Image (cartoon, rainbow, N blue to C red; front, side, top):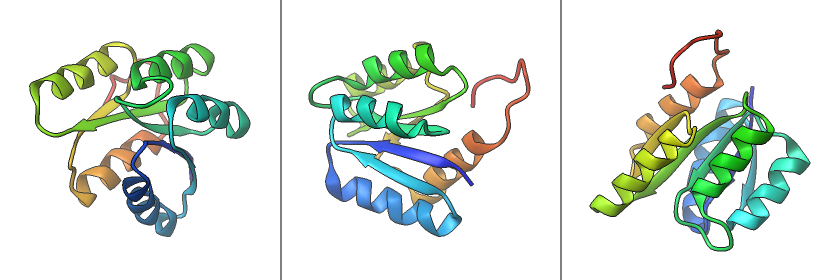
Length: 130
C-alpha cells in the first residue's frame, strides 16, 4: 500500500489516524510539528502527507508548498478544525496552494479513510484534485 506521513501536534489524533491506516496495509510515519514533518518528509519520501494547517515550528501551508515544490506527485491531505470560519479559510488556502484534499476536524473515520483511499489511487495526467 502507501507510505503515509502524519504531521499533527495532537499526539492522540496522530495515534487515532495511524490506527485507522495500519490495518489497511499502509506504512505510517508521524511528526509532531512542521519542522520535524519536513525532516521526516525528506527521510521517508511518503506517497501521502496528512498535515494539520495549524502547527508549531512551521505551519501547514508552508508544508504544502514545500512538499509540492519538492515532489509534485506526493499527495497532500490538509486537515484543520473546530468549525470556525478562520480554520475553514485556511483549509481553502491549503487547497489553493496545492493540497489535493482537505478535511475539517473532527472528521469521521469513514471520511478520513475514504480521502486516503482516493489519494492513494494512481492519478492520470490531467485528473482534477479530489
